[in-house]
Every structure is written in structure tokens, then in C-alpha cells.
Length: 224
Image 1: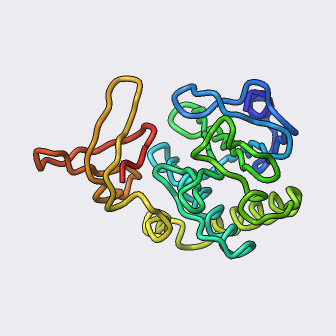
Image 2: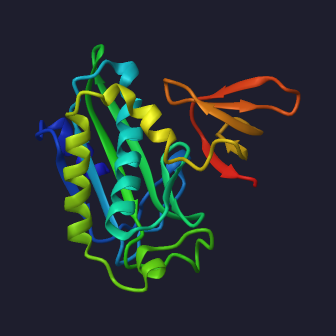
């Protein structure tokens, strides 16, 4: 992410990809450490979108949607999305994502989307709620093929006419809606039933008192 950010500020082209064999300081949401051991696929994609600032969130939802679709297609697994953009297979985390945006006046200069996929590594000793494609499939997977398939799928999705439908497309692949969840941010913890994701990508929670709460960001933990 740091190298991709430097390249983006120096004017690198749209869809530049920076790949790491492993990371010693990988980071996730809320500055959490992201384990990046040998055998995983770790990359950052530099996007220069023709989108207004308030539409930048669509890039993240589109990326997680394309990943879930790709994993289903390539490996016939039940890949699903946990809000906002983790990919789980059989309730085990396979993919995490982090995006960073920089602005130029009132326009998006670039968005860097960092993605970590557990491919041929084994994260279970450190993260028991995670798994890898190798563990699930019982065989090694080509990381090169995986990356190429995702980049093709994501580029195609960004250029299609119905990019505005990304949230409704994404909802068909999520396992978060209808479940009791806990959302953790740096400021608070919210618990309730995940009722919907609105057109701006926010999670709508039904709290214990029956009221609705709109959650824009945070780490989501499924309670049931």
C-alpha cells in the first residue's frame, strides 16, 4: 500500500498493480495487523476513477463482489461477502481488503485497493476463524491465474453500464444481512440485526430497542 501510494502520487497509470510476495507490516481496517505469510496473494491496485467523491465507496463493493463471483466460478465454492468487504468460504475468512483514497480539490485523485487472499498459506494457527484456498480445496492454487482472473473481472465490471447497481449485485452474495452482528469502530461498539445495506454502502442495524442505526464503517463480527 505504501509503495502503491508513492507511485500514485508520482502519476502512475490507472490499474497499476503492486504485488508483495509477503509483508512484514501488512495492515487491515482500523490499523489492525494483517498476517501476510508466504503463499498468499497480496497486492494493491491503483484506480483513477471518473467518479464523484461520494461514489468512491462503490469501488470497494465492486472489488469484493468480483472476488466472490470469481472464487465461485473457478473453484465451485460458496464464497460470500461479509460487510463491508471480507470474503468468507464456509464461514472462514479467505480475503481481506483495505482502501485508501486521496483527493485533488473536489475530485478523486486515486483510490488504492489493497487485497490479501489466503491462497497456499495456512493462517489457522494465528487466525482460527480464517482459512485458505489450499486448505479448503486440498490442493495448491496458481496465484498468477487467480490475480489475472480477478483483474480481468474487475476491469470488466468497472466498464459495464450498470456499475450503479453494484450494491444490489453485492447483496446477492452477502451472508451478513439477517444476522445478529457486532460492529466495532475506534469510538464505539454497536450490536443489532443487520437489516440492509443502503445505496451508499452503509449497514442498517436494528438495535435491541427497535430503532435503526446507520453504520458507515467498522469491523463486522457475526454473532449468529
